[in-house]
Length: 212
Image 1 (spheres, rainbow, N blue to C red):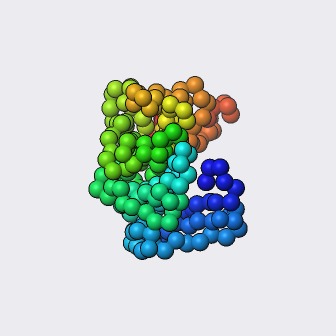
Image 2 (image 1 turned 90 degrees about the vertical axis):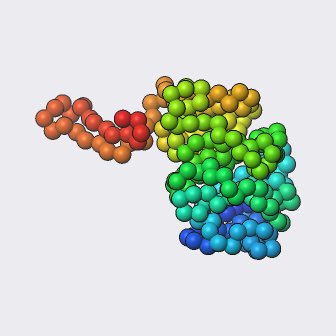
Image 3 (image 1 turned 60 degrees about the horizontal axis):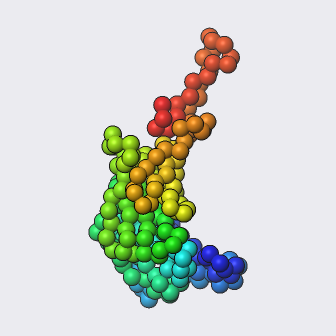
């Protein structure tokens, strides 16, 4: 929790029906598992849970629930996790890969503005009740393109940063225009490597995730 050295939040899941929210008030020495029924959280599903705390109001917590391949819902607390309200349980922002990639972030200045995604990116300006798609991994429009498989989202100043398995992308939050930041970075996620036994020892072939 921003601004506190004693209050910490955590989520955990270990299969179907095992998604929980935890809170510590002693700097992480002990954690209390919040009763899901009393707190208004799902008692089934929650195979993966991603959390975001609003920097402008650290009593506001969002939980993005996934169940299997798809999304289960977005839940919001305004009192530091004492209880939650289901904001939206119908808009699937994670596509069919919730088992693999799931991300959520909150604006640093407005606790009602948040972003979430799995394959494509979505934003909400009313605390998660309604969502608008703001990227498309299959488009040819460079202003709307961000690679699929979103693993991390981070808001800083007027920008939203997305870490995907196809690179790092940045969106201007006032225009929703995207741009890639990784073009000059000498980085890749390599899946396979081979050395040609008949060629010079310096000749190496690599297969990179989604990048050739």
